[in-house]
Length: 600
Image 1 (cartoon, rainbow, N blue to C red):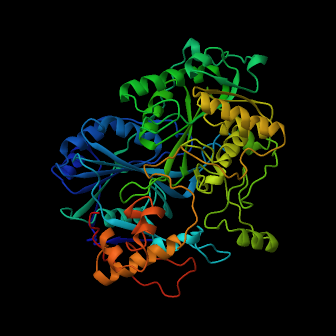
Image 2: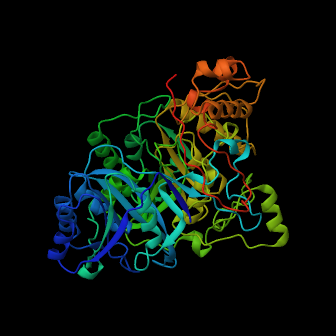
Image 3: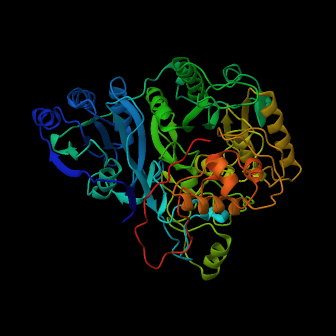
């Protein structure tokens, strides 16, 4: 069993194959439980073609479902973006889950990465946060050392003995859209196994004989695919200070080999010099403007990549497909700050080419590999770690000594690149990306001496990695602080210093609402204090209040006040069972009893 859902009453799974509009409407009319709409899969050569009549189908489904229904649409990304477009006015978007394919779909052996995931798009007829069980995914174990694939370090006491909370990237199961999807349906049946739901109704649209049509991008003069231009010398290897739209006007048409952008997400992040909180229509109008400029400066056959959350990526996709050609939706499994009972891990990197894409240099070996100093020896730029191996140094050394092949294929599902966890490798920027992500993207899409552009350069990760890899670069940054920070880090490269090295810094920026605690020496370890809270919780059969810990605990309450950012962090170990990184001899079903948290 790959998952455990607490307090679950599994939904009965009923599957229907529909052959006509009449059958479809009859099957869904008034249905108010959980409906799974199974779309026909894309075949090789069809990955840029849309399903015809999908707009009418999803509108009919929306109109006929009951008022409390949940709709899960399973299909390829090219179809799901258009499903959402026709649902978003009447249903509430909740989640985009990336599901691993059993067999990667080979789209084009040299111009695209194999497609290793499809999507499960979740909408609800009700207008409130998603209702579901508390579901955990069981730990996976490294085949070389038999320990958990993740090193949990000194926080094992705050994790559950069975596994971690479910995320929006499902890699512990695999299935194919044109085959058996029972493993995914099993999770869905448990995940939504709550009142008032009773049934999971799967509507298979494959027998309807839906056809695909290719809608070419609109080619306009400003997006001409004819010819290439040279980047002016005064822009080569420069970080420009100013507004992106203003600076992009100075870059000639068809002069850039690869564009990467990680724009502000309009989620209210606290940047040093500007706010990330625009009206949504204003935000996307602004995005369309600079995306159009990026398409203009891109050379024919080259790639533009944009990183964002899945919901915003849908909107970017719909605009970009009108002016560029869709290449791939990279699903980066990058765990972020927890949201309710689902761990947000799915970050989309949309890749679109200007005209027909060229062969990818990273796949054709035209991208000469540059040796990069990397603290994690298991990570290689173009050769990803095979599914299931861990990143522990001891295990990595053992595998190397025994010549164990721990490499896997490079596909569009990236799981071996993790966010920066330690402050010693961060600079003062709230959304700093790991350099390995840019090493891989730049090595995949460019050759040495080609031009890389990032018009939201931030603290410089894109231009710095391009610099290290022997590419020419142009960065644009509006913030004076981040602009100066990037310049200073480029100067470090010129002096032979790694800008991504470990350095003790005092940081102010933070990418979560939890306040940063001052560095201090602990008289009693935080682990010891958290385990003491667990002891008291078991004694009184609930989570203790601050006052109760002062009265019943062994340690002064001042330690809890000074060492922890919140009372929730204090109680982290008391809410769960604790785990071991070694494989259990006998897997037992844990007690799902939850302790009630009293207000402070």
